[in-house]
Image (cartoon, rainbow, N blue to C red; front, side, top):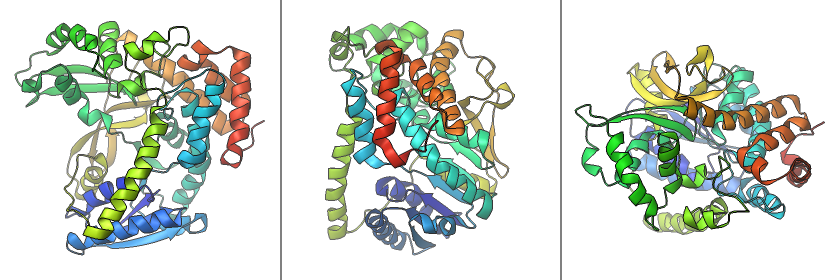
Length: 439
């Protein structure tokens, strides 16, 4: 079997996912094909994964493929393709995504999923995924494409609507949602045996049900504790707790993400909200700098003292592969097209995050029905932006980029239309060859 990792220069994540595969008897004897366009980062990943392979018994084989000219060979015959690319990296593209909007008075926290940063990241990544899809359809048409790259709903939605590639989008948030909430409100004693149900869209899927091991609804007790937690100046999950107060339900992704997915919290006319809700402006650039520096130190330590033994994680990828290969049932929260109205009050062309069953037949999404109307309404404010960004990538019409930015909840609430268009034009120019030409 062949497992291809696109963006293998993301060494920490490649180590985690491929390390998980090496912990599985069904997967460990695979060919692990590492692909990247950065030779140094690719070599770092190869060094670490080769050492890890030896500690795991020497099963399987690692192959490296550098550069666009070798991409098709990296993919040829693959059974699974894991996607973790970051087009344009932190420098220059993430810097551009933050610094240009800042000139216009538009502040962001993460900027990788929604907002103007998410729109631009989506456009430049689809520009690359189009070529990935063409190669996959030619040299490994039956492969499953496991996408981890953000903006998830935009990228997975594009792949599912406009390519023939078997695609599912995977996020880290669903697995830890109910656990993080119970820990946050001091109900750790309810963790064991709890039951939950989550559905919506990526980074804004709703914890629709949370029960203890005996089937008792935990939301009443959770809601009784919220005000005290929000009043705590050291609480950094206030946005999501406010969601429970105002919309009735907790959502999957962190408060720093969700602070910029709406028009409520980052407002130039209400600067006091930033401190009140502990909103970390410019958080993603800080993380990028810290991760780059942290990785240099970690790599030196690995070269000096060797790799640590890897324990299989709860990351979905290896469990999905194992489930398909062995025909062993497994359940995930997956990002899939809303075909046949899995969620009845969201559009069919939307990419939704719903429970999915995995087995030898692949990934099969399950029917959810209607979300609470207020939750669907919140999702639609994000879906509007996602669909218009996909349309811009498909048609190469600049007007759809303008429209996506205009309808983005945060951008549209802060800037007027003329300013939005001027900002978009400057971003397109700044990104240069990372974007196609729009008309």
